[in-house]
Image: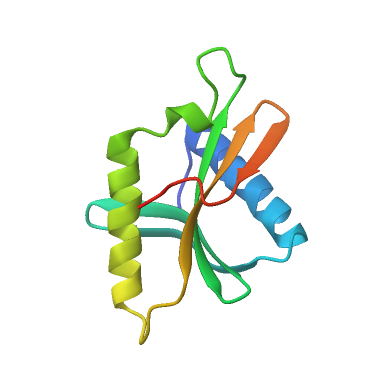
Length: 119
């Protein structure tokens, strides 16, 4: 996680990522890497769930008035996540089973959507 001073929005986003990470760890997932970035993409959390590699997008909204956190994932965002996952996977010696999960946080409500992005 980067250095320097974070804006209020960045700090809120980081807190959402920490909440998601705590939740996923309680369910047995293991953190591999946070905030993986490459040219053209980013993944909030890369985790291991048994033998599977899980690419996690964390979305946070104050409430669900405008469709909620999960609805804020656009096709462009999905392309960027998939691209970053492809770049990450190229670094590995073999191809593990993979999935794309979303942790949607709307106010105090956290929803873990397994296999939410199909590629």
